[in-house]
Image (cartoon, rainbow, N blue to C red; front, side, top):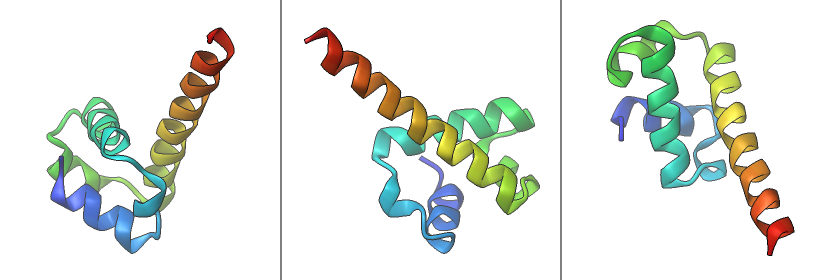
Length: 72
């Protein structure tokens, strides 16, 4: 997990909204979007772009959780 991503989440007040698994997924998304390792790529993103990635990951997790509950 990227230290820079974790620091940015903390700075924006988003760290407590994410799980460890979310942060790993955020790292992967940053790498996919920027084509760089997440520690380098995170500095290329604006706060708005970064927040969009974070909320997409959080929403995906919530959607998966709802699907699992509905199948139970």
